[in-house]
Amino acid sequence: MHDDWVRHIEQELDGELSLPERAALARHLAGCRHCAEARVSHLEMRVAFARSAGQPHAHTVPRPAIRARTLALWMLISLVAGLSAGWFGHLRWGGPGPATIEATRALFVAQ
Ligand SMILES: [Zn+2]
Image (cartoon, rainbow, N blue to C red; front, top):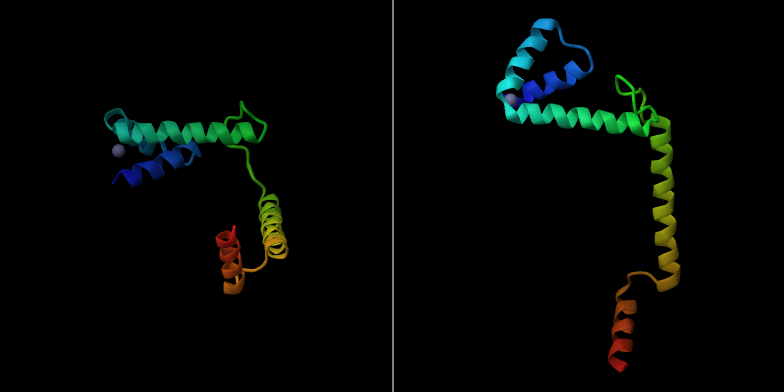
């Protein structure tokens, strides 16, 4: 039930609600702390987005705040970084074979 109002909050902040819908939402927010808090955190999230886009005084969230291509590039970079870290670890410390683990344990016991 509150989820519907939270969706209305999103639409209101995007300027997509009609006046009667905004009135109904305002009426609900006046009596519902849960939804009023949700509206505050939605607004604060938008402020954070606007700041990170370099427009701290924007009236709406600058679009696109995060470009899809930049996101894909970063995902690719972190994937490659993860793979090469795994490959380096494999070269440096050997693979996770049972023989290696046994050898390591024997070494610890011997010391
Ligand atoms: Zn509510």
